[in-house]
Length: 177
Length: 313
Image 1 (cartoon, rainbow over the protein chains, first blue to last red):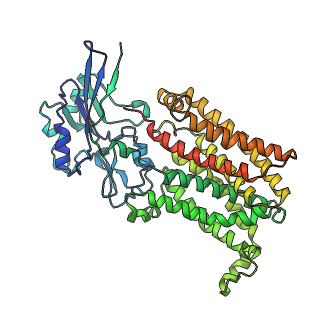
Image 2: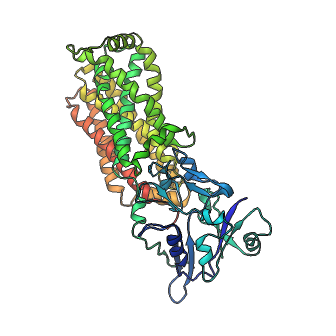
């Protein structure tokens, strides 16, 4: 089992519904977020193109955050989901420095927090909150090892990229382009 | 054709400024750790060479401040933690891939060792000192009889500690400025040079200062080579590393780095030390203080600049 997410940058309208859904579902403190929307504008008017990307933890296969964690608080769960065990985290910040995606933040309570792929929902067979609320259905969540899953299908048929692959982290969020 | 590229980032006010998660505590600790490593290395080295009595300040006096430096450094590390009450989790596991983990264990080993070393010389420096309890007196006797036995592991651990202060940073590939293996040796050499500076400050013996001064000049030359090597490596590297190097080669860190670290912190004090060796009268306080200030500023600049170098945005 290997969970991953594919996000269609051509369907995303940048409404930030995913951000709000995540904040509500996971009780993220006000002023913080586990996912966010980036707009990249290329060119000058009138020849411009825009790319909208909903970003979050990439749950990398080669996770620098898991590697550098001195206490083992950052760890892999079933399906390669990277989680932080709050009661083991000492808040040293090493994982925040190690993440090329800046996907982690220091929770006001002291521990480090980030996207969990809504593992509590996934275990119940549901999609993560961000995926389930997307009004344009631009996100696909699923198991890369399941050849019949929607995500494998969409990755077979569309061109995609991942962010900063040169960092060597083997990210598991794919952007359809 | 790309004419303008901009990323709006994320409009979440509490996150982006907070990603600079390491503040004054980390560079201060790196400085104290390097300095302690330097002093302990020289102390154990000259003990192993059998020069305890010729190198009084190196072997006996300077190590007195090491326990204080290490405890203060550990306190700074503790201040840096955001989830402080859980700090003991560091000592429930050994994680080989995490430099912070084995650094914590090395500190756990070398800090008590430095206490033992300093305590064994307390009565040399303060003859009226009394250990009061028999068991302490016996332990002191044992330590004095077995100094060489302690000096060997201390020399090894001090080198690991010195390298660790650099590897702590270089293990993060997400921060391109830190992500270079030369940082370990560079911080080790720089730490040893600051240790030598402390010894020069504390030594009253001209011969001893001459020996340490000579070693220090050599260390500074090696350090300068490592700094050139650091930037050469970056400029021959990937785009993010070229951008990182340019922060120091024309970017906003150029002036403080070259003025306070390279010139005032390395070249100028090394020149003064060389003049002293040639027989000119130079108060050793001047180069020593400059080296210490340069080492501290170097660590502040590296930690600060490293945190603004990244892959995205």
